[in-house]
Length: 271
Image (cartoon, rainbow, N blue to C red; front, side, top):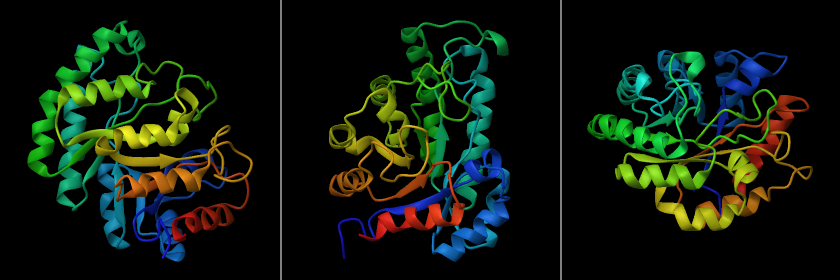
């Protein structure tokens, strides 16, 4: 067996094929493809869709919560965001799944009835918000994993210029301040490479806080192949050697036959 085999496992994502790709795969289609490829998990699934995964005998590696256009970053949204987290936590727990995605949100939420907050103010609001919900997650045996999203690429589904929590270091500051084993980092190596780089050192330095991992090629958010700058096998090796034992969401946008792209991606986990 190789370094990765059996330690890390791929998860197929819903949105690249369901929302972005011209073929527009349904969740049922994605589940059928996962079964065909021997992949046991799907990620970024709405709470109400979890029974579909159960029907196929699949795991939800990551349950959706609120959208990233709002968040605990502004007090006006705390009640709405808390309700969304409780719904996702309850659904994940009820179906035997453990990980729910969490977001920071934009610094300027004026368009949604909020306002402009500074980075430091945003951090304080996030810490207060997540401290208010994390006990509930602990009771249910669920982890919330907050994701840094890059703010440098303005292309649709490739970056989020309005997102305030784009720097991994800021997210780590909030995670450590909340101080719960149920509040962790969603390490999306695509976003972190664009904003911060130094991926392997960051994995080593923050290994105990990594609750979930996602991946796509840089630049472009395409396949993890020879046309992009991330050494994906080395990143997987670093994750395995530093104790990560979980799923890696393959959040790339296929540029060729999606089946060929996913077959190639799954092969990374067999060495």
